[in-house]
Image (cartoon, rainbow over all chains, first blue to last red; front, side):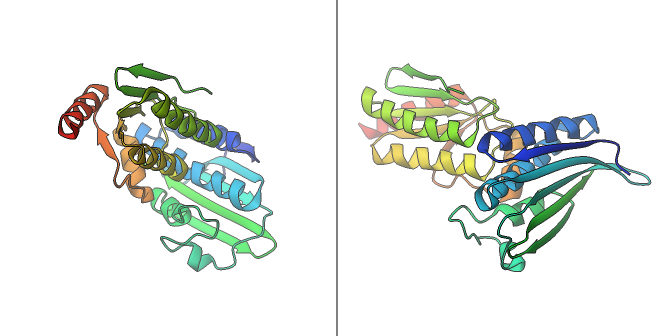
Length: 134
Length: 120
């Protein structure tokens, strides 16, 4: 059960900045070190940028994560964009369809502890990432 | 958000703020290149000490700035990447390949002065 949920609408580059700032504050509130908060904020920045570049608009939701013995943070990035035709390809380093850097998703996976993606062509993309406080 | 660009002799110093959007970064890129031309600068220092997140876009923009300025015949050095930011960049797979970096403003100036000597 999570106690906090912060939802940020993502539709412009300015929203990317807002989402990562809110993510950093929540991570610090949950007791993450400043180094981990930086990793989380960077992951949020990449996920939010994917929304702006591929889908145009969407949401980032930030929640606390209450485990039996530990706490963490969940970041959910969702959009109703075109979806990713090949998820396995998108998770490979160096792959990109928008002419950007092509290291967004694999990089985000490395920054966080858990990574789930659900994407269907024409129906949008949902990425859920989690990080536990050590 | 405007990024201040200071002129110190042959060197331009741009100090990045914490919360720069993509549009701010793009604006800074063109402003820096224009000023390098206008002042016939030989070196540029980009101070990112205040930046708390360096994502793929910011890192690509920095690389573009350095490469554009090199084509103009001047040198760029990025200074002040925070240890936590450097750690996140490595995890994300971002490199600033081909771009000079230095610890802080002072080291950056020393690097450029050394470069200017060998350029003569």
